[in-house]
Image 1 (tube, rainbow, N blue to C red):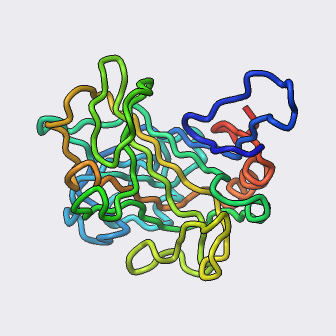
Image 2 (cartoon, one colour; image 1 turned 60 degrees about the vertical axis):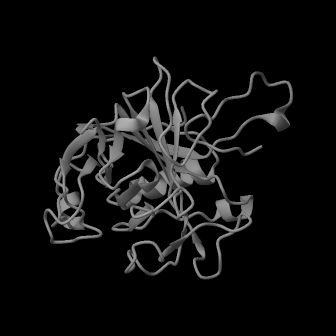
Length: 273
């Protein structure tokens, strides 16, 4: 049985029925906060200060001018350090002060597609750029896809906007990126249309190449009434994420083969945990 991987995935209580064994297809990168800038090399390339504030993870050098060569020549805050990719999100402000996540985990998953599609999953191409979520959403139903919840507080219903987390928990944000690629473009004018979400477990004919689903999970050290919470892009439903892939090609291919296609849960080292 193949089930959703990533945060919240659980292992079976016992092995009484081998057919019920939970199988998770994933590898992960745990990336610390690197720096904060009002830059976005995907949406506003070459224009420093043109964007709202972003919090960057992974590559230590990302700014408005960053290209693939810059990422490949730099170092990373990620575990594994071999992941030279750049990830960034709108900065969270609480009472006007920036607050960075206490953890940022990027899951590469095989969920969301049927077994036949999963079996032909390809590595994410080097240099691929993707933006997920809607930074200009005017309400929860305006293309917002991120979810907010609370760590270890199951009684709090997930929401597209900020939620009130009890003391002792942490505010969480989950965002899934599309996992079907058109097989040609590494970017597109809207930074989204070269990618698509699967339909009924299959990639559409316009985007025939399945790649791992990137899931962004952020945990912020804040709780309580979210009345003073604000993203640099606006309300909680404007949460979005940017990804600029700089995984070494051979390592990405190995992990897709050994973890995703094999339906194995791997840790940051790309080895079954």
